[in-house]
Length: 201
Image (cartoon, rainbow, N blue to C red; front, side):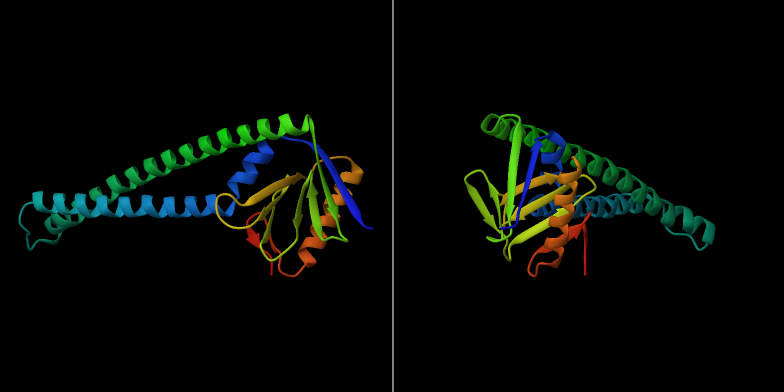
Protein backbone atom coordinates (compact mmCIF):
# COMPACT_ATOMS: atom_id res chain seq x y z
CA UNK A 1 0.00 0.00 0.00
CA UNK A 2 1.53 3.29 -1.16
CA UNK A 3 0.73 6.16 1.19
CA UNK A 4 2.18 9.63 1.54
CA UNK A 5 1.48 11.65 4.67
CA UNK A 6 1.65 15.43 4.88
CA UNK A 7 1.58 17.07 8.30
CA UNK A 8 1.85 20.85 8.50
CA UNK A 9 0.67 23.97 10.26
CA UNK A 10 -2.15 25.90 8.66
CA UNK A 11 -1.36 29.44 7.52
CA UNK A 12 -3.16 32.55 6.33
CA UNK A 13 -0.91 32.62 3.27
CA UNK A 14 -1.83 29.08 2.31
CA UNK A 15 -5.55 29.78 2.43
CA UNK A 16 -5.04 33.12 0.68
CA UNK A 17 -3.42 31.40 -2.29
CA UNK A 18 -6.05 28.67 -2.16
CA UNK A 19 -8.80 31.27 -2.56
CA UNK A 20 -6.85 33.47 -4.97
CA UNK A 21 -6.38 30.70 -7.54
CA UNK A 22 -9.80 29.17 -6.98
CA UNK A 23 -11.47 28.88 -10.43
CA UNK A 24 -14.61 30.63 -9.18
CA UNK A 25 -12.75 33.71 -7.94
CA UNK A 26 -10.55 33.78 -11.02
CA UNK A 27 -13.74 34.07 -13.07
CA UNK A 28 -14.98 36.84 -10.78
CA UNK A 29 -11.67 38.66 -11.25
CA UNK A 30 -11.83 38.21 -15.03
CA UNK A 31 -15.37 39.52 -15.38
CA UNK A 32 -14.59 42.32 -12.94
CA UNK A 33 -11.76 43.48 -15.20
CA UNK A 34 -14.11 43.34 -18.18
CA UNK A 35 -16.59 45.48 -16.25
CA UNK A 36 -13.91 48.05 -15.46
CA UNK A 37 -12.89 48.14 -19.13
CA UNK A 38 -16.50 48.61 -20.29
CA UNK A 39 -17.04 51.45 -17.81
CA UNK A 40 -13.83 53.14 -18.98
CA UNK A 41 -14.87 52.78 -22.62
CA UNK A 42 -18.28 54.32 -21.94
CA UNK A 43 -16.64 57.20 -20.07
CA UNK A 44 -14.25 57.76 -22.97
CA UNK A 45 -17.11 57.94 -25.45
CA UNK A 46 -19.04 60.28 -23.16
CA UNK A 47 -16.12 62.63 -22.50
CA UNK A 48 -15.08 62.58 -26.14
CA UNK A 49 -18.58 63.53 -27.26
CA UNK A 50 -18.82 66.26 -24.63
CA UNK A 51 -15.44 67.76 -25.56
CA UNK A 52 -16.19 67.56 -29.27
CA UNK A 53 -19.48 69.36 -28.74
CA UNK A 54 -17.77 72.11 -26.79
CA UNK A 55 -15.08 72.57 -29.45
CA UNK A 56 -15.43 75.41 -31.96
CA UNK A 57 -16.50 74.67 -35.56
CA UNK A 58 -14.00 72.83 -37.70
CA UNK A 59 -11.41 74.76 -39.64
CA UNK A 60 -9.68 73.89 -42.92
CA UNK A 61 -6.34 74.58 -41.31
CA UNK A 62 -4.79 71.28 -40.19
CA UNK A 63 -3.30 72.68 -37.00
CA UNK A 64 -6.61 74.09 -35.86
CA UNK A 65 -8.31 70.84 -36.85
CA UNK A 66 -5.95 68.95 -34.56
CA UNK A 67 -6.64 71.36 -31.71
CA UNK A 68 -10.39 71.19 -32.20
CA UNK A 69 -10.81 67.45 -32.84
CA UNK A 70 -7.77 65.47 -31.76
CA UNK A 71 -7.05 67.31 -28.52
CA UNK A 72 -10.55 66.74 -27.07
CA UNK A 73 -10.27 63.06 -28.03
CA UNK A 74 -6.90 62.74 -26.34
CA UNK A 75 -8.19 64.57 -23.29
CA UNK A 76 -11.18 62.23 -23.09
CA UNK A 77 -8.88 59.23 -23.48
CA UNK A 78 -6.60 60.50 -20.72
CA UNK A 79 -9.49 61.04 -18.31
CA UNK A 80 -10.99 57.62 -19.04
CA UNK A 81 -7.56 56.04 -18.59
CA UNK A 82 -7.20 57.65 -15.15
CA UNK A 83 -10.67 56.46 -14.18
CA UNK A 84 -9.85 52.97 -15.47
CA UNK A 85 -6.66 52.86 -13.40
CA UNK A 86 -8.42 54.05 -10.24
CA UNK A 87 -11.28 51.59 -10.67
CA UNK A 88 -8.81 48.77 -11.28
CA UNK A 89 -6.86 49.61 -8.11
CA UNK A 90 -10.07 49.81 -6.09
CA UNK A 91 -11.30 46.50 -7.50
CA UNK A 92 -7.97 44.80 -6.72
CA UNK A 93 -7.93 46.27 -3.21
CA UNK A 94 -11.46 45.06 -2.45
CA UNK A 95 -10.78 41.57 -3.82
CA UNK A 96 -7.51 41.20 -1.89
CA UNK A 97 -9.09 42.46 1.32
CA UNK A 98 -11.95 39.98 0.91
CA UNK A 99 -9.59 37.08 0.18
CA UNK A 100 -7.37 37.86 3.19
CA UNK A 101 -10.37 38.08 5.50
CA UNK A 102 -11.82 34.83 4.15
CA UNK A 103 -8.43 33.10 4.41
CA UNK A 104 -8.12 34.11 8.06
CA UNK A 105 -11.60 32.76 8.80
CA UNK A 106 -10.83 29.43 7.11
CA UNK A 107 -7.59 29.06 9.02
CA UNK A 108 -9.27 29.78 12.35
CA UNK A 109 -12.08 27.36 11.51
CA UNK A 110 -9.79 24.42 10.77
CA UNK A 111 -7.32 25.27 13.51
CA UNK A 112 -10.08 24.80 16.05
CA UNK A 113 -10.94 21.42 14.55
CA UNK A 114 -7.40 20.11 14.06
CA UNK A 115 -5.43 22.01 16.71
CA UNK A 116 -2.05 23.22 15.50
CA UNK A 117 -1.29 20.61 12.85
CA UNK A 118 -3.27 19.46 9.87
CA UNK A 119 -2.74 16.06 8.26
CA UNK A 120 -3.46 14.95 4.71
CA UNK A 121 -2.81 11.40 3.53
CA UNK A 122 -2.52 10.39 -0.10
CA UNK A 123 -3.52 6.76 -0.62
CA UNK A 124 -2.39 5.63 -4.04
CA UNK A 125 -4.25 2.31 -3.81
CA UNK A 126 -7.52 4.18 -3.35
CA UNK A 127 -6.35 6.97 -5.66
CA UNK A 128 -7.60 9.47 -3.11
CA UNK A 129 -6.62 12.11 -0.58
CA UNK A 130 -7.77 11.53 3.00
CA UNK A 131 -8.52 14.61 5.10
CA UNK A 132 -9.73 13.49 8.49
CA UNK A 133 -12.99 11.65 7.87
CA UNK A 134 -13.27 12.98 4.35
CA UNK A 135 -12.02 11.22 1.25
CA UNK A 136 -11.44 12.98 -2.07
CA UNK A 137 -10.85 10.67 -4.98
CA UNK A 138 -8.75 11.84 -7.89
CA UNK A 139 -11.13 12.19 -10.79
CA UNK A 140 -12.06 14.25 -13.82
CA UNK A 141 -13.06 17.27 -11.73
CA UNK A 142 -9.74 17.60 -9.90
CA UNK A 143 -7.81 20.75 -10.70
CA UNK A 144 -4.33 21.33 -9.25
CA UNK A 145 -2.44 24.63 -9.26
CA UNK A 146 1.23 24.62 -8.31
CA UNK A 147 2.65 27.90 -7.00
CA UNK A 148 6.11 28.57 -5.63
CA UNK A 149 4.95 27.74 -2.09
CA UNK A 150 1.89 25.49 -2.31
CA UNK A 151 0.05 22.77 -4.17
CA UNK A 152 -3.58 23.88 -4.43
CA UNK A 153 -6.36 21.35 -4.97
CA UNK A 154 -9.88 22.03 -6.24
CA UNK A 155 -12.55 19.39 -6.73
CA UNK A 156 -15.92 20.24 -8.24
CA UNK A 157 -17.40 23.42 -9.63
CA UNK A 158 -18.65 26.71 -8.28
CA UNK A 159 -18.05 28.64 -5.10
CA UNK A 160 -18.69 25.68 -2.79
CA UNK A 161 -16.24 23.28 -4.44
CA UNK A 162 -14.00 21.15 -2.22
CA UNK A 163 -10.57 22.71 -1.83
CA UNK A 164 -7.40 22.14 0.18
CA UNK A 165 -3.70 22.84 -0.07
CA UNK A 166 -0.34 21.29 0.74
CA UNK A 167 2.67 23.54 1.44
CA UNK A 168 5.88 22.75 -0.42
CA UNK A 169 8.17 23.79 2.42
CA UNK A 170 9.01 21.22 5.07
CA UNK A 171 11.59 18.64 6.03
CA UNK A 172 13.30 16.36 3.53
CA UNK A 173 10.62 13.66 3.68
CA UNK A 174 7.85 16.22 3.21
CA UNK A 175 9.55 17.72 0.16
CA UNK A 176 10.13 14.27 -1.32
CA UNK A 177 6.44 13.48 -0.85
CA UNK A 178 5.47 16.76 -2.51
CA UNK A 179 7.73 15.98 -5.48
CA UNK A 180 6.19 12.50 -5.71
CA UNK A 181 2.64 13.87 -5.66
CA UNK A 182 3.46 16.49 -8.30
CA UNK A 183 4.91 13.88 -10.61
CA UNK A 184 2.00 11.51 -10.00
CA UNK A 185 -0.64 14.15 -10.69
CA UNK A 186 1.09 15.44 -13.82
CA UNK A 187 1.06 11.91 -15.23
CA UNK A 188 -2.53 11.15 -14.23
CA UNK A 189 -4.96 11.51 -17.11
CA UNK A 190 -7.97 13.71 -16.48
CA UNK A 191 -6.28 15.86 -13.83
CA UNK A 192 -6.03 19.54 -14.77
CA UNK A 193 -2.56 20.56 -13.62
CA UNK A 194 -1.26 24.12 -13.83
CA UNK A 195 2.18 25.43 -12.92
CA UNK A 196 1.87 29.00 -11.61
CA UNK A 197 -1.20 29.61 -13.70
CA UNK A 198 0.26 28.17 -16.92
CA UNK A 199 -1.40 25.04 -18.18
CA UNK A 200 1.05 22.30 -19.00
CA UNK A 201 0.73 20.49 -22.36
